[in-house]
Length: 511
Image (cartoon, rainbow, N blue to C red; front, side, top):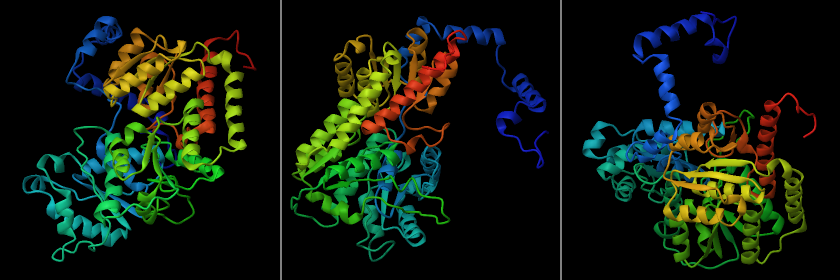
């Protein structure tokens, strides 16, 4: 084989070597039992047409590459944003490996999560012993300030009661953790909802623990504003951008679930298992806030309802990216805090508008298909309309009927949205049919869209979670005016790349 200690080859080059090609061809002939290449090509061609599209959209059971993850992933992400917190999953080890690798591949960062590794005996007799021993081990080995527990399918199917189990673990008999040690929890069954649901359940679970379960607190209203970012793969940069705005305005605030340092630790010889995050004391005091704002409406419905029940003013947005979305957020913050929006931020807005105007000729008339979470797809659609682009397909696997109505209403606000179509509960195999029968110029989504790009030839612009096949996108913001400028540049770069590749005659130096 050509691979040796003296000549190390990347897998991209290695598997092009004759020896490997021979192995692949032999396995294909001996084990795949596939029809002829001509039959495969004919069937592939058939799947590109309207007749197959109708059959594809008629399926009711099979799901092929849905654009959502399961609840515990969102719960783990929410828990990690608090000081010294160890996310703990009550369930099988394999599930936790998936959550850990999903986040680590996107964030390029170690992602501490523990599990109590439920197996067949726990499935029969219940997972109490797993949870008691798991809490004891996690507390002693990793010295957290808080352990936040979520569940997987196995624990939910057999009906494990986390509240009762945690009470047993804290009892004098078991003493797995001290009685006053914070152990908030959320039931997060993977077979319903999605990662955004899990985020909501865990965020509410943590606040409920500090505001009601640890000790019942009477609210004493202050001037602070709570901000909940929501499940956001770009939170490392977006949370910092948000804090920059709030600091410039002089707003008193608490960012609940701040992962900006947790998932962006420096390489300086020291491993930080816990770094940054919302302090536990700030989480406790957050009950006194004047208001709670969610930056992603569909990540926090239960949490906002709970905050409202505590007497706080609540407001929600859909991923504040673009001009109008950022305007709305800043004006709401100004209204609630009584603080003015400084001239420096207004200048950033003007620079963004200037940049869009500079590039209008290249943006106008370009059509885009968008997929992702409910809040992201709404924000992306709105920003495309602001730029004079044409959303063609807006697809959201975990979108609700309310989201669908909101997306259609958004498209109707602009002539650029006249041809736009909204697809709720559909997956990327549905989108494949759409792109072959009613193609757009570009595709916006996460890394899973690269297979659509290869199949359909429609260029992909990576702008949401998860991004596995590119590095460090999450270190640059998409929130706010500066974030929107970054998104604008990402889109323009792809437009120019396609333009340059399309013609030798107009391969111009200046665009």
